[in-house]
Image 1 (cartoon, rainbow over the protein chains, first blue to last red):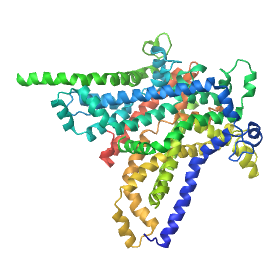
Image 2: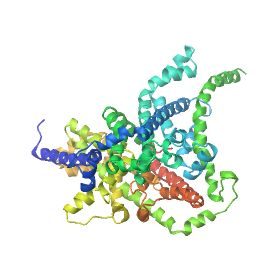
Image 3: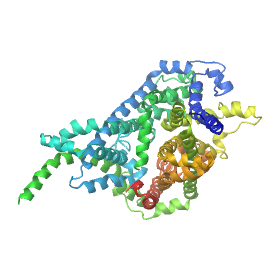
Image 4: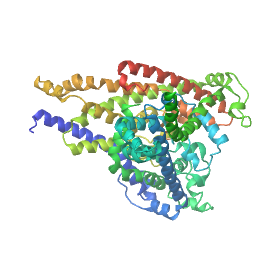
Length: 295
Length: 308
């Protein structure tokens, strides 16, 4: 295809603009990384910068040497993300499959029961009182998993819509003739055929568990129960949160490369996302489209 | 007689389905419905021993107290104005980027641009606040150490000075969130019939004319839908953005305190639970009304995008 002169110029202009925009999007993350590998003294003198005068892996060395707090936090985040995501998928698919069957008695009441939670919310105060006084989840791993993120109406609706539009009802009828009950149909037919939507909502559930810091803020104050995001949140105010578990004496605090370590831990926290993003981005994109279509 | 038997038999086969739904129904009951009933706490003089439902009634005292403070006006103003600014900026920037990206000829570059603008969307707001800190930290920040000295300006006490925070928050929000809308608008543009553009070109329309008389009009349904959905949520603010990014700095509250940060901070203050729950209920009720209204309007504009 031959492009006219005007078109060529237009292509050049929009590509320049978009390259600049793309840089603006990515550079802050580069700054985070560069800051984490800058020598501590250089940081104190020159500040955070893209082009540090002196590199150092001191912050990462510190993380490796005094790994107790950070590895523990990382472990908690991984457990929470895995359990929470698995739980979300199980609950959402178990709820969505019956709702996708048109002839289920009581379907519309149950759908409304799910849907109404999107319209009205009791807010933080009653939830906080309930989770802390009735369920006593404070400072337990459940504090990260249970409140808010386990099952949302929005996911149920997305999965239900996928089941009812993408899986032909004839398959169910055929399975029933072969003597399969609904549990078998769910397990052998619905879950395998529903894989695309389950991967998508699983990805978003995993992302929100990995990135969540609010449940940690509300329900966890014990330093050995901090997730990685909760630890980061704590470190903003108080770098000592990091030293709480390495050693008891205050000398430990002196050795923390205080300025660079914040950035190192923040970078470590987003590293898994950066690593999987290139492979999973089409699912992220399709998830956003789905969300836009309904809701 | 026969039909009745059939229904009973049919009903029996549905039983496993109801059992499958029990975990989800129970979870929603606990996580969503009990707190909904718990809004009564805003009308009570809460004490831990009597609990949410047993504490003595207190009429509208909590609300009277909340609205007698200056905070009420500030948090409502901040929540609304920031949301309006966010909606305006992200819509305009999102549409612009979507038009540009859709016009890029090279498939590879197109994909690269899309991936990079979506990347910040996946980063936790705590980490975002660290990046902002790397830029604005008083002692080590890039602005105070490199950029301002290079411009011959004196360093600033960013976290104590309210002047620039509205701009900082709008930029941060745009950086983090614009990819979402852009992606949706790109899909909208991809759905436009190419023959419109071919016809326009034959008639000698330039790029700008094509954008204003084809692309934008065709995008209007999705723009309006997204707008109305955001307006439905205009009474809710992004807690992380307003709590984390200004690092909970007290001297910035005048321009960073929103309903959500207020509810949290009051809840964590001893004796603050009354005004905290009052603000929360106020948000829930107004929020509910706005969702209903915006959905009614969506229904009028494009029925297929209405959420119910």
